[in-house]
Every structure is written in C-alpha cells, then in structure tokens.
Length: 320
Image (cartoon, rainbow, N blue to C red; front, top):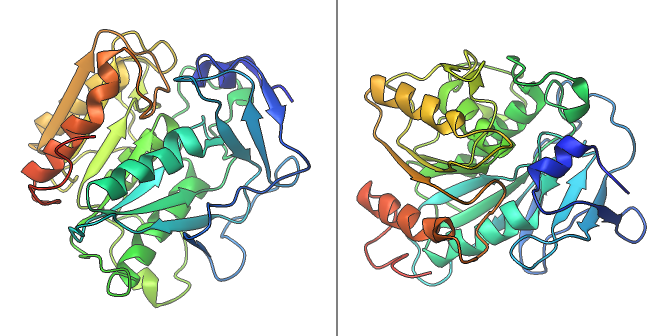
C-alpha cells in the first residue's frame, strides 16, 4: 500500500509502505494492559475509509522499519508500568502521523520504553485517525486553523481516565503530563491550552476530573502557526499552560522550525516555564532512535528537565 506524498514526507526516509498480513489491528506486546477509551462508541464518530489496519514500512528510520496504524474508530490506551523506581509521574504519549496514521512504534512504544526507564508510568494513546480537518489529502496546507476535535476529545478523555485510575496505577494525579510527536505535538499544545473547553458530554465519573496536563513535551510539533509567523489561535497559550519542553531541528522541512519558535515565544510572553532545544540538523520524525545526529540525545535533556520541575526523582533518567 502507498500513502500520499505528504504522509511520506512526515516519515522522512519511509518512502513506501507494505501492508501487514491481513488487516491487522495494532496490539501491545504481552504484559501491558490495554483498555478502551470510551464505554461505548466514541463521541461524534465519523466514517473512515475502511477497517482499522496496521502497516509496516519498507524504508527505515534509524535502521528500523516503522509500524503505522490507521482507520482508528475505537481509540484505546495502553499502560506501561515504570521500571524500577516509581516516581509517581505519568506521561500520556501521542504518536504522530499527520492525523492520518499513527507511528505506533517510532513515536509510541519506543517513547514508552524511555518513559518507563526514568521511573514514570507511560500511557500510550491510540487516538482516532484519520481526523478531519488534518488530513493530508484535504488540500489545506500550509495550515488549517480548525481544531482536530476527535483527537482532542480522545486526549482529554485519556488524561481524565489516568487520574481516575491514579491510585490503582500508583500515579500522583498532580504529576500527569503529555508528550507528542509531530501531529501529536500539536495535540500536546491543544490539551495544554484547551483544558477549559468541554469538547464532549460527560460519560461517567472520570469526566468530572481535570484534563489539564501538569507538564508537556512537544517533539517536532506541527500545525502551531498561522502563515508561519503567528500562533494558531486554536492553541491559546495562557499563564495556566503547563511547563513545556520543546525539541526541534532547524532543517525540519515538513512542518518547519517556526512551529516551535512561535509556540515558545507565546509561552515566554505568558511567563510559562519553557525549555526549547534547537538543533541545526535532524529533520523530522527521528523519534527516540539513536543516530549520529546530536539531536537524538534529546531524551537525556528531557529527563533532566523533568527532574528540574520535580516530576521524577534525581536518581532517574541520568543515562539512556
């Protein structure tokens, strides 16, 4: 199967995709609990082109192929317990993929491997895609200024469910953050700024809880600017936006370096504690895979930042 060229650009070196055997629905590795996000159908459910399926790239990033899932109508979250010391922190991870697919290993399970290694619980969100308006085939470039409502609903619901299960999962409900890549980085900005907005009718007691993240990590985020120099009005940064960590490559020609620059500037103007790391080289969609590029050392900096804001202990995340 081949995807449109814009989707290919998102995943850089992944130039063609081979459909996995059958119409495989992505499942976590054994030992990790997966649960549905909604007790019934997701709100405002829209039709998708076909059944949920997983594909595996022929091309590679960091020497490895990439697993992608699309046509998600039954969103789930998968819980990964921390390894060793438990800091009480939790990170909800949003994979990227242009709101068309989800890069479930490159920007999902591999992110959770790192999160759990620094003593935090990882919750991997498989949110609804494709998600209007952010479809590569919508001819809405450079940036459509509408919200990705289905994805935002899923993200808000996931944050509330994490807090609802905080005691059972040994999580401090005041240490629940988010991390997202590319389109998932835009979702990070959405939940960091739209937490006062009710996007769906409450379905159970969990929806009485807060959906505001306590911290946020945006890794090569997209869709954050309007025409390249002003902030997307659908991510209204305020003093209540949580502390934020950003990573970006100057030679990111998919979404552009201006995404992080404009968002960081808005955070600074609102006096939100923020840390941004800008590298000359790295492109887009590098995830956490080690290469010779210095940018792939960003997780060590992220762990140090999480320690500095009191989310993980000083003994966690010193090495990767």
